[in-house]
Length: 148
Image (cartoon, rainbow, N blue to C red; front, side, top):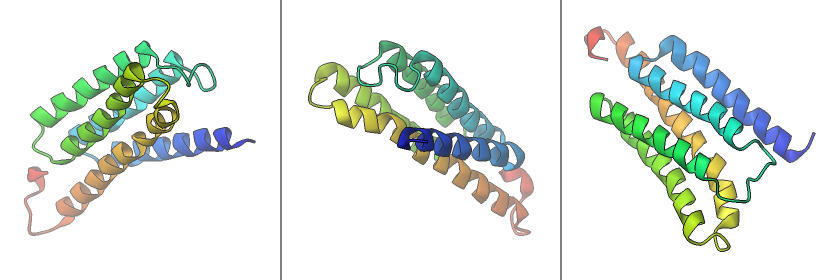
């Protein structure tokens, strides 16, 4: 097993565990958010499988990431929660790497390859953190349970 296989396994495990946790304990916005990340991850694999052209900018990946960004912007606009702003910002950074790759492909090739996988982790972390916070606040006897 090489390093890339370990990275794929680590990401899949993180995403799967997060989906179960958020699915069980999260509110509707958190469940939508983790669902978008999961579906986006699967569609990314379909659009550009590992080892097949990760070194070149893919317009299909840019289009997919723009759709994901739009979905998170909608959640941020409709939700009263703070985490969608963070997740939207994290994903905007991922989209910016696509744009940088299109503008100057030779200068940012390595950064592009690293950044494409990096930003998913803070996105998942923000959604899991928000779910844990929501769960803790709902368990507090001082707060009204329908507020979260």
